[in-house]
Length: 84
Image (cartoon, rainbow, N blue to C red; front, side, top):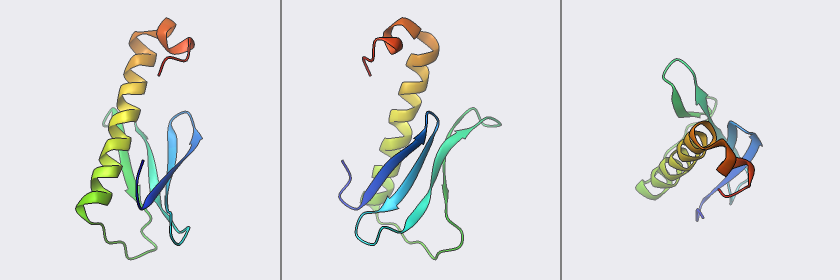
């Protein structure tokens, strides 16, 4: 759980990143097919600054999504049972 950021799942492969204090939209985490991995795309309409804790929280979310995607592809029976 992040101290400053809230991650809201929009769909199976898209997560919005929000500031918990101000409720501002910070960016989007989604699967980028050209790189075959999840990426974080910050909202370019804002001047954003991140400390190490916020960046670590975003990285942790990317990692969780990567693991979930791997399990869904390689262990479909495990995924269907809701064991993530």
